[in-house]
Length: 57
Image 1 (cartoon, rainbow, N blue to C red):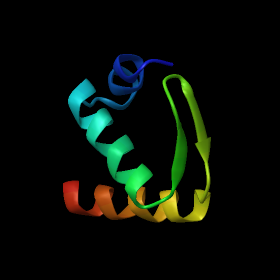
Image 2: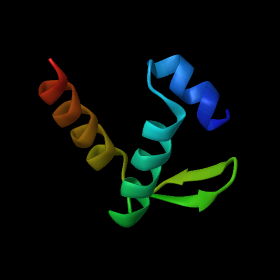
Image 3: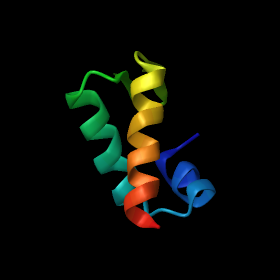
């Protein structure tokens, strides 16, 4: 999926998806480039999502 497709699916802008990917790379939660992304720490990614959802709602 492209960042645009991911954004459309999640209801986010492409820029937000790109910022999240950058943050996740910095936190060593994902690796990869382009369309190839490897999830390195799924439990930590889940916690990030739970935290973001709590802040949003």
